[in-house]
Image (tube, rainbow, N blue to C red):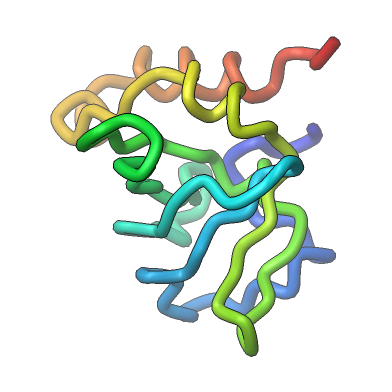
Length: 115
C-alpha cells in the first residue's frame, strides 16, 4: 500500500463524512462497527469495535486498508481478513494520541505483505 494512513481516491470517501456506526466488512465477512474515525492528514483511520468477536476489543485500522465505502448501505469494506483484524494490535487511545511508535507498529502490521 502506498499510503497506509490515507484514504485512497477509489474508496469513495468524502472528507468530513461521519463514518461512526458504519459496519466493517473484512474480505471474509462482517467484523464489527466503526466506533471512531479520523480524516487527519497523515493519520487517517477508523477505530473498529470488534466486540462481537472478542468482547470489548477495539482495533485501529489505517485508512489505507479501506477498499470501499458504501454510504447507502453504511458499510466499509477493508482489504484484511477477520483473522488479520482480530490478531492486530489492540487500539490504545493514549498511545494513539502521543506515541509515534504505536502508529509505526500498527502501520507496519497492516502494510506487511500478506501470504
